Every structure is written in structure tokens, then in C-alpha cells.
Image (cartoon, helix red, strand yellow):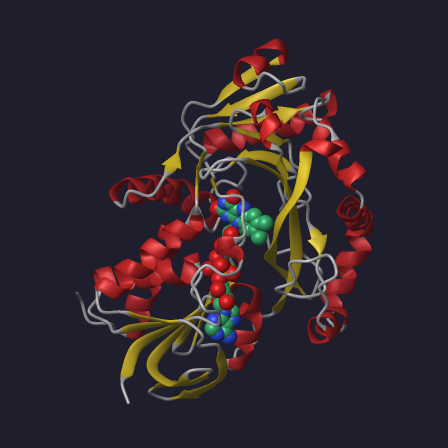
Length: 403
Ligand SMILES: Cc1cc2nc3c(=O)[nH]c(=O)nc-3n(C[C@H](O)[C@H](O)[C@H](O)COP(=O)(O)OP(=O)(O)OC[C@H]3O[C@@H](n4cnc5c(N)ncnc54)[C@H](O)[C@@H]3O)c2cc1C
């Protein structure tokens, strides 16, 4: 049986970006193992499709560094591989005077993170960028763009295969045995041997880490993000991307309007606690996932701290009126009948036993293994840069031969 140098668990954008970089820079034999019948089946294929600028993140954090570098690399990759994308810019809108200090802080972070062309847009001037928006202040961010991350991930997979790597779908990893000279993975499509393991399993990354004998020190809590789509007659209300000023206490950006690269405009996502990790419906429930969540002490600490916000998100999930009300703060002309439900996504948010939401990307090295334990937004934007970072760690740790 063939023995690979590196087995990557997860055919999402992070796993495949890592495989792309490893096959480009080393002579290592690489296999990507994906549970589903296609790549990009979970977070990567269910997101807003925004190429983030790097505005929001604490200067010096992994998010800030990888987002700004990854954004430029993403634009170059899309150009080189003919992937439809647009650098259309976005407007962040303060809808009340109370939000202005947080907008000031975003601008400071943007400048510290090296963003070019940021422009403060006051009152009337907002209409020059987004004619239907309402607000007291705004920040124009020209380096933001749109793309389909499914298309990007499919391109990564093609490159990996062209360079001799394997991408095996329908290959859920069920068990992992570690030996002194490598790992054996039992998968839904057979046994795989490899010298080293890279865990990019997204919503399952904590479980995969435990399967590999490592204590991740955190648990993935799933947060569903629900979207509506604007009916075609109302597309004219949104030129590009319109975002609120986010609540700095949470890692989510608040419901926004996003023009999609394939056409149409989405509104959302909210952030509702999900009772199933890959649960895309309001009624989705998995007894194992729910039990694991409620027996995790970090969940109750998180709930005690943020129950009010959680209750508001639940309310917005079940009440379209409440969802529309949140959107009307940005676009007062939007009415309930202008929106039809669209497909949801589920975010993998790592939470520590203390109840703290893990804010930054978290990539941890084990024996013969590397684990990506927290890769929320903007990990799709930053995927090329994250892949390069993981490949650097792998080259140093797994003694991979050069290309
Ligand atoms: C609603 C929403 C909106 C977002 N908007 C944006 C945005 O606009 N811009 C941006 O940059 N980011 C955005 N993000 C974040 C971005 O989508 C994620 O950060 C990124 O897709 C993470 O990629 P991943 O490869 O780590 O995870 P995933 O895409 O979830 O991939 C993990 C893969 O691992 C597989 N897997 C799991 N367990 C196993 C196993 N045991 N064996 C084999 N395979 C396994 C899964 O099937 C899955 O395909 C958004 C996310 C969501 C949910």
C-alpha cells in the first residue's frame, strides 16, 4: 500500500491551500482526505464570498498579517487562473453617533494594518458610494472584493492533482493511530498511511485533534449564519458591499449587504448557536453534537456572558421582521417582501474552557502533526497565506524533500 509523506484531513479552502503550497515547494507526496463527495462542501462553500481587506483585526495578530498578505495573493491567484472576482470596495456605515468611536478604532486598525485608500465619508457623501444607505458617518474601504471561494478551492484542487497530489472525496477519517514513524488513518474509502498529518477539518477540527491523541484545549461551537437574498427588483438598492460597525465584543461582523460575484445581493449572516455542527436548517439537531456542547464547561460560561446577544440572534432567526429591522438601520427602504430566504452557512468558532471565544487563528503543532484549530473568517481570504505558513511549519518539522 502507498505511503504518503503528508495526509491532510479536510478538503476545504485551508486544507487545499496547504496542499497547493506543499506540492509547489516540496517533493512530498500529499493526499487530501475529504468526508463529503466534493471539495468546499462546508464553510468554504457557504460564506459571503468577500475578499476581506484586513480592516478589523488587531495589528500584529495572525488574522491581520495573513489577511492583508492573503488578500493580495488571492487577487493575484484569481487573475492568474481566470477566476471571476471584483475589487469593488465596501462601505462601513455608522448609523448613530454612539458607533463613531468604534468606527474610529476600525480606521486606526486599518491604517496600522497597512490598508491603502481608506477614506472617511461623512453624512451626505455616503450617498455618492451607496445612494440608498442611511448613516451619520462611514469608512470607504477600496481593497475589499468579491469572489466564489468554491471556485478558488476547485482551482487549488486542480493544481494539487496536476502536481501529483491526490484529493480523495468520500473519505471521512474515522480513526487515527500514531506510530513513531508515522500515522495510519482509517477512512470511509480505506486505510491510508502517512509520515505526517495536517488537520484542517474545520467544524470537526477539535474532534480530529483528539482522534490524533492531542488535547486541543478548546471545543468547536457551531454558529449558523442565515442569509436572505434581495429580490431582483431591489438589487439597485445595493451597489457593492454595505457593512455595519461591528460590536467589538464579538468576532462576527453583523448583518450586511453583499453583492455576489455570480449576480444577486445577499443580506446576512446573523450568528445563531447551532445544535448540529453541519446543521444548515433552523430545525437541525444532532443529539451527540448538542450533548457534547452542553457538557462542555466553556459553553455555559460563554452563555452566561453573552446570553442577551444570543437571545437577540435567536429572535432574529425566527422573526423575519426583526431581521429586516436590523437591515433597515443601514437601508431604510428595504421591506420584508424584498427578501427571500437563502442558503445558510455554519461557522466553526473555537471556545476555550474558560468560555472565551478564540479570536485569532490557532494553529498548533503536535507529534508528527499540525492542527488548525481555529480558522474562522477571514480564513478564506487569507487561505494562500495560511497555507504558506502551515507549509513552512511542515517543511521544518517533517523534513520534507525540496521540490
Ligand atoms: C456564514 C459564513 C460567512 C463567511 N464569510 C466569509 C467571507 O466573506 N470571507 C472570508 O474570508 N471568510 C468567510 N467565512 C469564513 C470562511 O468560510 C472559513 O474561514 C473557511 O472556509 C474555513 O475553511 P476550512 O478549510 O478551515 O473549513 P471547511 O471549509 O469547513 O473545510 C473543512 C473540511 O473538512 C472536512 N472534514 C471534517 N471532518 C473530516 C474528517 N473526519 N475526515 C475528512 N474530512 C473531514 C469537511 O467535510 C470540510 O469539507 C465565512 C464563514 C461562514 C460560515
